Length: 110
Length: 116
Image (cartoon, rainbow over all chains, first blue to last red):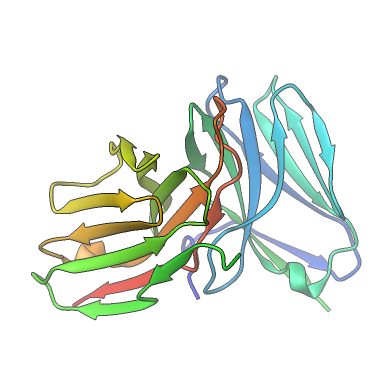
């Protein structure tokens, strides 16, 4: 499959632990943010989104936190499972254009 | 729904040849996006369409690249002539939104292009 970069930051966690993946975005005018998961050989898959009028949103086992003051986004995965192993991207949107971060590789150790 | 469909899944061609990548968006989606993903540059937006009309092609690397959307269910990305540095995975994505901020984009499986 495809890897995003030779020097992707990597987060290794034990199965069952919680994972936190961080992302810094660049444009203070961005008003919509998405986290994507990309497994080897596949296209990015939507996980969760958040609009700029919120600071927290929860899904099933995932939570996204938005700190507009420091332009920071985080993805929390509860009870990480081997199937969570993938590259995770954050994306910011401004006027219908998305800008993707370089990604973080999550390794889940059994 | 079958999701976004892309073809071919893999393409190997020689430098100088024309390459055409195809995409069928999710039915009812009115936005279509073409992205390129490489190891060095990550995921880059090339062009996007709204209701079959190209809105922003500022990400298209050069004149060798062109994209069309003749109808709501089909789009092509063409590279002519192709060069080795065009080798990448090309993704098509579609979304449904009429708001200021685009709704969630759904990605196809990608076309892995190798130019020898």
